Image (cartoon, rainbow over all chains, first blue to last red; front, side, top):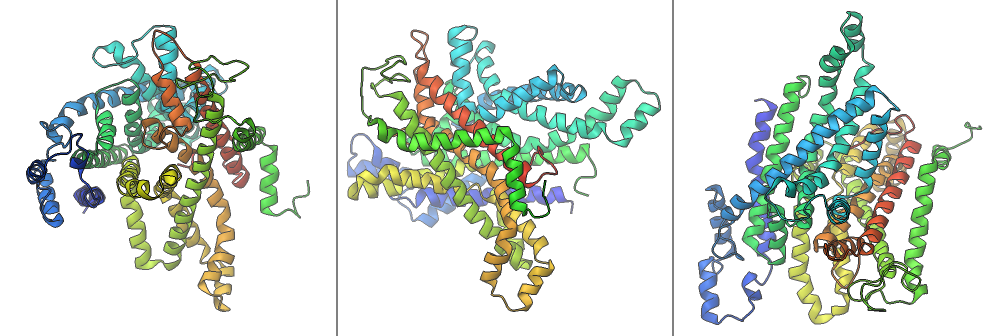
Length: 304
Length: 307
């Protein structure tokens, strides 16, 4: 069996662990979400509610039911938004978050890679300083600081971009920048280090010796090799992107998954929380696997 | 320079002190610690009580202005900094405690124990940590806060902080465990360990006296990455409202308050700029000290990325 097949096989196991842990952690807590109803429900109403959500069954049977439903792809009804299932809510919010994350990822790669390349080609040049500055910002200015500051400066003082909501492209500029700049900084740094490393290696010397133009040497023999470390970091980076999107969605009032996730904690919407936990775990697994496969494809030595 | 008579630790210290960024970062952190611990006490302004009219701009009476409830922002920022530093220190401490013992046992026992312990680390790596921190904090809120509020309501903020430190520490130990294990694996074949074993040193003493001193370097190096990460995490959670709760202040909640006051009618910039600036300075200082320590302890690759 190939190693990546083992990893694919591990995903359901991990999801089961996650589902079990989150189920028992949340359900073991005395007092369900119904205790927090504003008007104290009568005993009949409470019993009816509990029966509807199978809250009156023994815990192990609830657990079995939950696992069974999850295996059929049904994450259950939301306890807060009574007329929606968790699947509905995920279906509505995930595209928004994916769009945000995808654009931020685009900024990270589109800005980070060229900047890293330029910085490495001319060390001490303007691009090198820009990359170093960006790295400093990336390390010292967290997303929850950068977001409000961008709102303050670009949104309120200069009035270039709208500061909240989601819909047109103008709305997307500030959130995308907020989320993307930090990762662009990291990408630029890895790219720069990778380039410097590769530029020293013998195959580059060979390429130059056989009379290739410098552009061809850089584009064909240096950049692709230097991209390898960047690719190997995309897995962890995507995980951090998820974390960052919680904050960005919160700051810019974007109706994405992260915002719903945070809200489900305040409203003790247990099914929603469990669904989100499962969803994020799955997403992380798939993204990590994807970046591993990509890495293996780019660099066949990995994993052999 | 007389390098022959210097111990590795002293050499590292000398290299550290020559690093200007690192030293200024350290000075800043010491200053921040002293001011944030003793400042609120000296100023005698209650950071959680209004002491002026709301939204006073920064000036002589309120150095950083006041917030919506007329609370003095400067004293709130000081208290927030204190919480950040405390969480960073204790959270990182918890992660060291778990990570080092896990790595020690795993590397020392080897074989099947090692395989299972490391398998567990792999599984935990694959889980989204933010989500787990949030889950444990929710668990604390639902289970412990109700219980505490009946018996000892005044202690809730303290316990909440403790819960956060423990839960942050308990998700940040994975890399530490891996690094320590790798180090132990290479150490345990070394002659001095074999010699100690052969004269019948007890395993506990072996760990404490012979392994730990050799692990100090790698532990410190990785610790310098953990502390800013934990500080960042705390502010992140507090920013989202999951960490420190009002009226208690942390830099994260202060930044969130500042952000919520952003509107196009009247810009109350000080509410955002001061806590955000301090957060930035603190992270810069922590990272500067970390970089300095790393290159001091491992002079070969001074600015290598160790993630």
